[in-house]
Image 1 (cartoon, protein in one colour):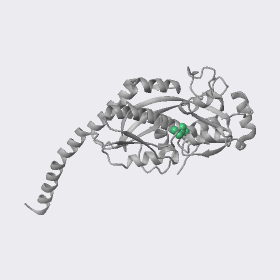
Image 2: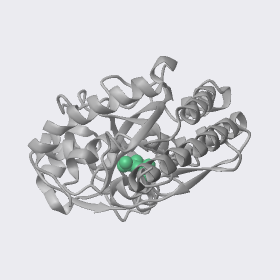
Image 3: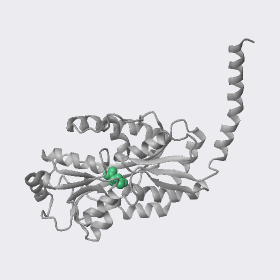
Length: 328
Ligand code: ASP
């Protein structure tokens, strides 16, 4: 055997020897705790969804699913960390619509949203609400529109950074009004909500999973919901369209991801645990309190999630390009 053939044979033997190990690892999965990265701060809406789902998945998997908050850069720091993690199922990501919008918003994204992940399944679609600090002058959306047009960058809008849902919602609002506000980025809307309640910022648009409690407690002023129809959980809150802002529609969907190359058996186990969580009465009840519900189970599959992500990237690309907002 020449040297080249010997080396090739050696490599093949090595690969063969490694195969049963990878197989056995997938069979035994999970044999230790799983880290679920949330790319925003603790206490925010994505974190809330993740903690509910992680607790239920822990029961199904027989191992703790531990939430780790890796905020920053509109969710791209946490997502990037998972894209580069070992593809063994022990590091997963629960992200939102920002996974799709980052593909266009970030000019130098250090990962590819479409090719660097294995989709595990969709989780939930969450409406957003436009809210102001308590005591903000305008009493409804019509007055708010006039107020923002008048004060422009004198209005301070909090968001979770470029690429976040709150950024996207604010961007749509500003482009509908043809004006600019001053935006303040946080690592998540958990801390932004603290500042809104404290009166340090004026406005925010965020998932009902973060805003419902504060709206009901009267700690913030609710203006509108961003879905075409009113919500059962906040029936008195008008839609943006009712308030005269036409064609305004955005909801935040969440999905679970593993790094590309995670064995299929592992993705299947994660998906089964996710599907069980979506049928867990405790998760369903808490989601309902927060103005959302689990996705229909036929959407909680890797295949549907993969197609949906690609469709969302394509849907938001022209909107973002037209708005001309980019980040490096
Ligand atoms: N709601 C945030 C956003 O604007 C993220 C979060 O803190 O969950 O995208």
